Image (cartoon, rainbow, N blue to C red; front, top):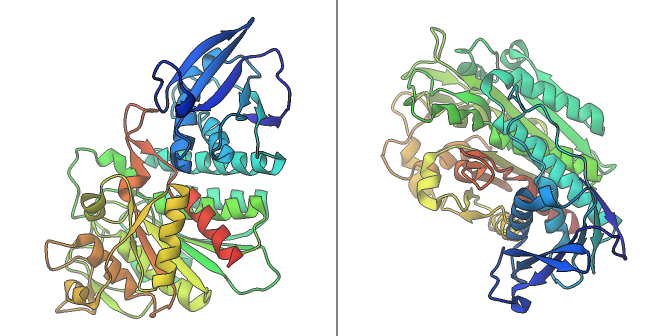
Length: 456
């Protein structure tokens, strides 16, 4: 969609936004009604004035999804009677263009190019442009997560990162498996060696300031498909494990967004990418593997592979990039979903200020995350008799906490590190698809967090 500011009503379909307090005939939040005004149809849409940004975006996406076939080619959206985030509304309208059927042979039609006129109290060209860019980036990330595994190998993920960097003017390196081994990223290699698709290590850097120091490093899990390895998953719903790189996609989207918005921040996005498959070369339960950090790990369960590749990525990032702040994001444990459901990710950090900043950014953006304990009481959960650490807790409880404690061991006690465990919010059912699909979680969170970091 293309958005244009106007202060007049062309002779076209008008979409007027009203607070629910002014609704007639008992219209509720998220409901709409077609009204005739002279010869021009009007769509009256009602929302609560105190709605959160994500709720506004969702409702506008839903409105467009269900009604835009009646809009005509150039409708007008009038916000003059509504005090709320016009940016969130514009983002929701743009997100209505997202499609899941691009691989169907009988639906090759592209999304219709449509222009919308905007009448609002606060919107300006910059607001429209930034909202549209964020929606575009989020849709690109959703498309990446929703791709099937044969269209999204680790190398494909690396090619996506290279192409983005080349187009939007930032740096990107993609290391092949030989480079991964020579760089001593042994845990990443161990996870990926059971697949015909070799692992890669993606290192992207964006410099929005003259200084060379990295303000923020984002590390994302990039398991492009997860069978569970030798500790194989049940077949039911295994096809959804194409989403196991959603954390990696989010950090790649964040650096693209920073570059496109030209944010004054120095940012790195690190993605260890691998396919966890079953093969004669696959890592075996009981093996003890080396890691970049120098620590050894007993592999209790090959389906706890995400923490292994993140361990190498975190150690490498801390020691080589020396960022002021480091945040990793991963679809890491089902335990986090059992604890928090599909409404929030699990947030871990020993730095209260960083934890508070991410928590508040989550509330502001709608990509919510809830602080969880990272106390030393849980250290015993990851102990091993034969190695420095075990990759699965010895107790059948607190799985998400144990995974966070495992990652913490590879941060060299970095003073500003946080971990976000987000499977429940990254891929879920919605009104826009028959089955589960990508949500784009992390883009709005990182956008808000980066902006807040810049203004500190």
